[in-house]
Amino acid sequence: MKTRTIRVQGKGSASQAPDRISLFFSVAHPRPQYDKAIEGCNARVEAIRSAASELNLPGADLKTVQFGVSNETQYENGRYKHIGYTAMHQLCMELPVDQNLVGKFLSSLVQRGAEPQVRINFTVADPEALKQRVLADAVANAKARAEVIATAAGVKLGSIADIQYGYSEVVISSQPSEMMLESCCESEIAPNFDPKDVEAEDTVTVTWELE
Image: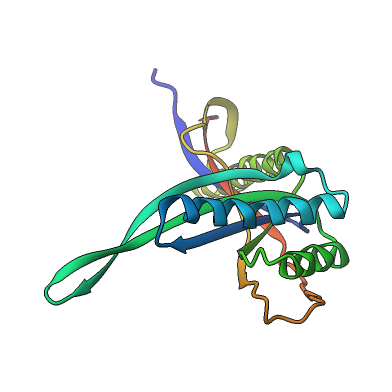
């Protein structure tokens, strides 16, 4: 006789107060000459590295995400005219969730003329622990749903016949914020942030035999 089964998908979620800040810096330096665009961009990136070193932040943690040089044109008299180049460098680094430290770092960037565009993401130092909580919640959710269905149908859950997982990665998300640092800013920058909890979710499909 064919074994009767029930197959239920469980959705798990978990949240945690962030304990790490991911800082993303974007520097764009336009100049008529190719080499001057790169030189200027490099100087501003070096200012970011110098600011990090001044605060004893590990310079090795400041990593390049993307680098490129684009050809700039301007539309005049029915055609596009070449006007120069823009060198672009994007970097990122992680810091503890420390408003005072972040404020000193951003202030130093302004004082050194780096003037990058800054994007801040909040994350966790141990994402694997958060993922494990999500998966445990997903299995518990699947079981709770299966028990409701089985009870309504007048049957009981037996042993687990199959578990399916692994088609997608656990999604961990936070709400980013952006700012532009310019030399006209105040010399002391004091960000006042109260970050939302980092959230994660995923699904697991479990099949039970029915008694």
